[in-house]
Image (cartoon, rainbow, N blue to C red; front, side, top):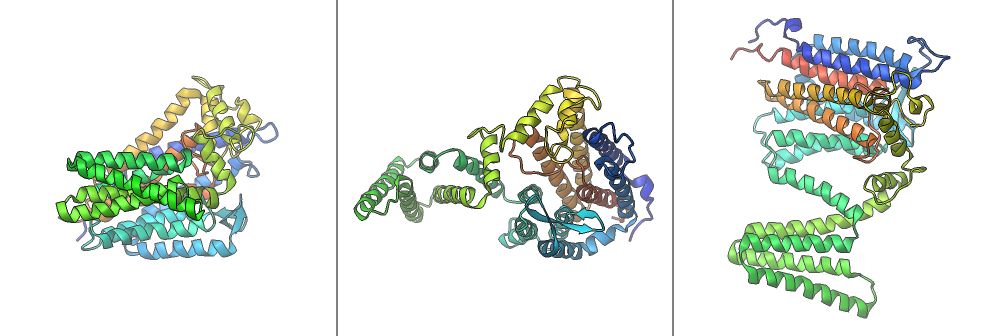
Length: 474
């Protein structure tokens, strides 16, 4: 049974005000990036800022439609929306328009739409609907695998375009799963996977393998207090590695010391399995299994990094990690971005006075690198103000998500929070050299209709669900 509600009075107007403020400031900065003496009118639709104004007004219509739609619609049709999103990701691979070597866009009547942006909304709804179901427990392997399948299906289709930036954002849903009961060990393992990726890129496999083994041996000694057993494991690693090298030298296969150590790790893990049956030291066995898996993962990363990633993607990661420097080539965007932001000083050069902006030194300045304009024209104070606005919006979304009475609304709210946060962190992080340049927009701020409409719909779905959180009788 539902109480009658007044949507207008129950709407979280503080979130609406933050959304509108950030969107308008974003449009002002898009105007600054495209301004010249020949195009001064804000209604010049031949320019990006004129088109963005139309998309901004259209986003108000999107928000109104979402708010006026019955909240039950989003729950009942979440799987259908998700299926439609997957279908659109398949269609774009067949009929899509190629932009920047990625077939990610539909061209409809002169308007370009990117289905990957809307797929985030659909994935959030489908994941919320699944976790809201009966007997769903993320500590269960079956429930966890089904949840991951919901997230990874669109990722697989997006990678086929290929669009690495949009695919990376789906990692945000891991935070949602953690909030809803994902085993902390699995969550921490995911963080370790990310750390090992960068270790594999920066260091040689031999040194990485040796460090992982040393850490594992210390861990076994501390957890088991069986120092003779630990020494036996270390001797097994060294012995098998030495034997492998000797056989390799005799046969001439050129296996190498790193792969010989890998053979030693496998032998030590098998020996640890035997020790577990004898002494019941399961944690040590898990640690060595994790050690062996980590070593194999490092070699997998090395293969993917050199054989799967495109040259410009490898160069961008290497530049951010300091492995190489190329300010006139692959590192040009980042180099010019940091010059632009740094040149703004404390208070900036003033609105429409940015030289880096005016002379187009930073590529993609109205989309991926829109924050450079803020840094140059508004300075540190203006940049800090924009960052604070985003942080306040994120904290408000988390507050709204946490006060929901239904699991569906809460999971959806945390999905919005996580996706928005990852977009915000990566976009601003890549302009200042904290993360590789992978090309994703700053929500509500960057030029483009697809991202603006998708994030607007995603936010206002939560606000619509929140407006009815008290409508059901207890």
